[in-house]
Amino acid sequence: MENGIIVNDASREEEIANERKRRRKNHIKRVARDTIGGWLFVLPAVILMAIFTFYPIVNSFVAAFLEHFEQGVIGQNTKIGFDNFRAVILNETGSTGMQFLRALDNTLFFAIVSVPISTFLALLIAVALNSIKPLQKLYQTVLFLPYLTNALSMGAVFATFFDVIGTKRMRDNGTASYGLVNDIIMAFGGHWQDWLSTGNTWGNRLVVVIYSIWSGLPFKILILFSALQNVNKQYYDAAKVDGASKATTLFKVTVPLISPMLSYLIVTGMMGGLKAYSSIVGIWDAKMNSGEMGTMVGYVYACIQNNQTGYAAAGSLMLFGIIMIFTAINMYVSKKKVHY
Image (cartoon, rainbow, N blue to C red; front, side, top):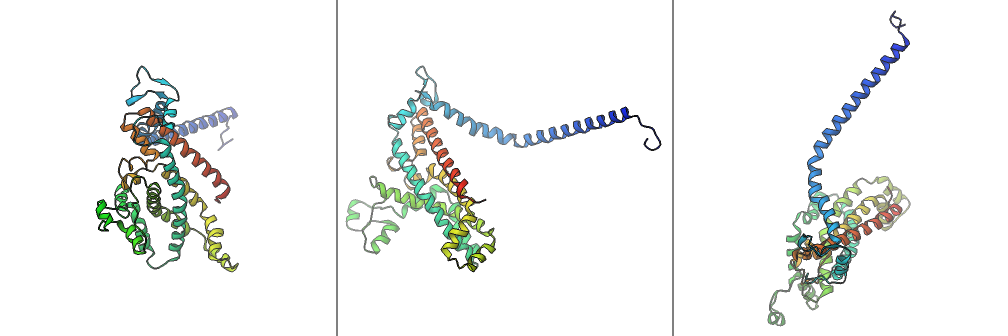
């Protein structure tokens, strides 16, 4: 009985069942409305990604296994196989202007050398910046400015530090322009070097590594400085009480606490290092010092310019595989070394 009215159990159960159905229907409508609304919001981005990201990836994967896939056109001689990969590795692609194995060697060298050094230097600078209170914002701005500069422009300016300008006679009689780096070397009694000349492989590589380290510092400093701002100061107080030195505090306290950011910078830095291209073009040009300083991305572009679509796809697919391998290694190591 409810409010003086006798209620039948069957009708009561039916009423409850109907109410549940109504609520379930309203819930389904609300979820459907929110889902449709969400898809409408992301639909433009999905369409653009499908056209400019997913389709090129799938197309490149297919083209890599199509032999004689010249100029992106399937002909009578086109067939499925691994001939593109064999030709790329054995340098049987014709006149691309550079060799694949040399490009691979350069790319791995730039990434493996520059990324750890730039990350370590960024850590030291971020720690020093974190301990400076006066003019801290000004230092942050100055350190971050190179990151806002166009890579090609920055590479062209950076090349002037190493470039030797002048004829052979001017170089012999000392009237040539030797660049800032050579001026410093000669000021200390050393002999100038033609850093950017063809044939000076290690000189070329040194220039690229220095440029990569310098250009990669601003972003890494900003990320690590932000991470240091969130570290609980009680850890440092405890380290002082225990009599820990600054080096011990850095490697035993600071590094473990910001290890997630360090892992992130190493992973993204390796990805960027393995895709190096703009810096090389900025220092030399699209020919990449007659192909001596060619990278994997530069090799792919050279194949595309020669209408060798299959070779370009094979090279890009191998670059993708190398990036995935390095990323997997970094993620595996981070599971053991990174403290979240």
